[in-house]
Length: 114
Length: 113
Image (cartoon, rainbow over all chains, first blue to last red; front, top):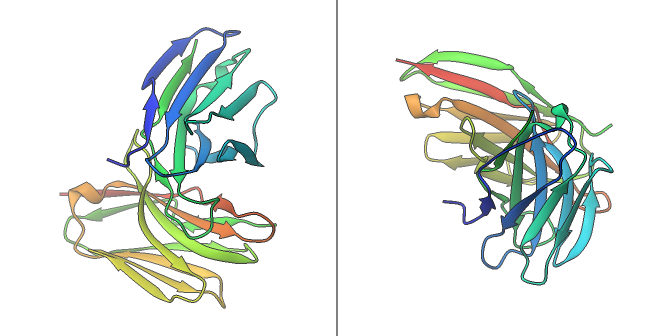
């Protein structure tokens, strides 16, 4: 068990809808990363937060947004959903802002857009 | 361009055999190189982390090597088990500016009885 909790595990929704994915990092970890993994594809970095502040942005669409709250949990909001947004969304946490600290991944939220 | 390339894309081996997965990168400067194991439908799990000054690191039957001069790394799996069937992902941390993790596409390993 990595200590990173993601909810929900599965989400099925229709095109055009909006969903919120939630991540609770490991106790003591200040950084949260979000990744998207489409079927049989590699992990695509979306965004990183460190202690409540946005630290780095990757290939995140304008329809997607995220935030990290004072209690360090994070939410990823996906809106105007399209079929191509169907993917596994992973959250990962680490103690610092990156560097040599291990990255601990949750088991993901599987989003299916119909 | 900072990239991480892994080979082979997929591999099938028999239980008990050894195998070696390759990772070539063009990331510079970099602070560390990581190997992760990802079971289907699960989050990646860290196997090893090597800084640029380390040449080898082991974790049980997994041994990673790093040659920073040639920008190559390998992951050697000894005496494979069925549970080793997974994707293995090489990740290099780009340290120019902020620390950015650059992921390879992974090698999908299948261990057959």
